Amino acid sequence: MFAQAITVPTRMLDVRDNLISRLEKLIYSLINSAGIHATHQSQSSAQLAAIYHLRSGGRRVRARLAIQACSALGLSEDDALCIAAVVELLHNASLIHDDLQDQEKLRHGCVTVWTKFGTNVAICTGDLMLSAAYGALCRVSNVQVLPSLLALIHERTASAIDGQCADLAAQTHAINSTDSYEKIVIAKSGALLSLPLELALTACGKATWAGEARKAAEAFSIAYQIADDLTDIQQDRLTIGLNILMVLESEGQTTNTQDAASRLGLQHLDAAAAAAHRLPCNSGALLLQLSCELREFLTPRNTG
Amino acid sequence: MFAQAITVPTRMLDVRDNLISRLEKLIYSLINSAGIHATHQSQSSAQLAAIYHLRSGGRRVRARLAIQACSALGLSEDDALCIAAVVELLHNASLIHDDLQDQEKLRHGCVTVWTKFGTNVAICTGDLMLSAAYGALCRVSNVQVLPSLLALIHERTASAIDGQCADLAAQTHAINSTDSYEKIVIAKSGALLSLPLELALTACGKATWAGEARKAAEAFSIAYQIADDLTDIQQDRLTIGLNILMVLESEGQTTNTQDAASRLGLQHLDAAAAAAHRLPCNSGALLLQLSCELREFLTPRNTG
Image (tube, rainbow over all chains, first blue to last red; front, side):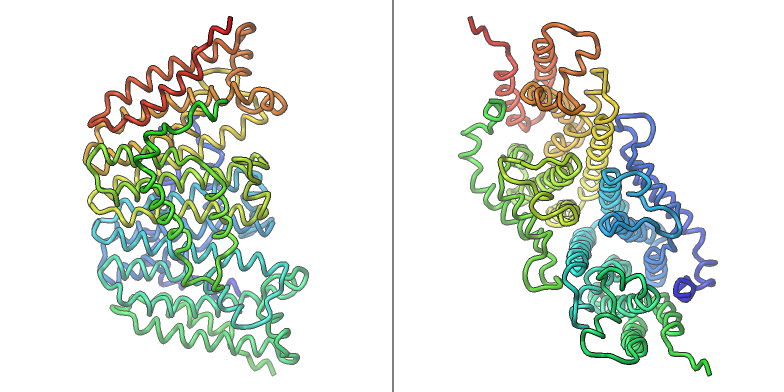
């Protein structure tokens, strides 16, 4: 139900599908770039696992956010693809290592990399994709912006790692304040969701807007996580996973926890939509659209 | 004995120690760069583990190779430090993940990161250092060379990952040809040993010499690995670890395997020294010096 609610808008898919197909080719070439120096003529296990992971699904939301923003801001298609490759590779590197750390056996209905290829190959695969993400930057046309892009990518990647550390710690020490919950979500998910827009704005000389993009993406990431938590609550109760319903309960909210969580999510969506709307040249259009669709999911329905 | 044989030359230590101290500061700032966005005011477990790992030892050989080459080639100290930070962070990221994959409990006489902080933190720590390595590039003064540096770093990192995959596979399927052994060593160790010189040459517009630097570093890496294998043979026989003595035995060398291994190492050292000597502006001086010291160790002694 939730997955359906945040499906990428059909119109956006139509317009961009040729670019997404070029993106996949770029990503594969970055993953296979060590081919000539490889110890074998064939692909390494990490290369095979990376391709397996990418082919097993994913909606490329971060790549689409980058492509839409770059297009709106007048960047070339080649630059848009570079930035899209950076964010999509970073995101998928984090998924492969997160799945291993969380011992998740399935993703998108397929067995996860560590389950299929083993722990050691999964570590190598995440490393390869993380390196490939930075490798994608070498094709950006305006070299003057590279230092800013590099600094930004490392800062957000370090933040995502920081958030993952806090999330893992929360599995043994339950988080019991909304404030801590939001900080972890912002670090873990907000950082890599805001990167597509921040990179696009920085690449076209509008870095002063990056703060606004970040505000939008961070607020969206909290709402997204709340929607996810509402879907996953039964599974999360079995572990001590991070879940807003359990956080609200530990804060003393004993009744209508789901409504309270939805209201909190809607507040963040309002903030996300307002900030996305303010971004220059309509560069926040897709984030705005995703916010509107998530609003549908989080709005309490009158089922009477 | 071997560790002593390849100690960094004392003279080189004297000259460069102030730079090594600046390097450590730069590396720490890159590791802590997510501080302002951190979920806690204090350091994350990955940041703590990265600092722990760096403080637990290491001779910074790759950093010293970079600093010596950059200095010889007329690059600024700031650029030398950036390149040194890249190679040292990459190398240490690989050590942290390799130790986890190989289940090594000790490094430099200290417990390894995964042993002290756990598997999940070790994965995050390696990721953080890998990202920080690329983050260091944002301070390179000549932005025109950044695309070439980025492409080179990703290519060598992907090669090192490829080599690690092959090394891990060798733990279950023994390597039984010198050719395969050398290919794995070149991919796994040669790539990150050649990177300091290749980056220095590329950063100063002498990328045409990078191939020669690579030849020198790859040959040195094989000799270094052979020396290491001669020291570790007893331990390696307990597992099916990659070891030149076992490779030579499987190729039919039944007597004087140690001498045969030493001879092979010395051949590679000759090639390494010759190529290092050819590099412009004396930029291979430290690699040449390390080759001479390793020669001492590998030369059969008349103990009569």
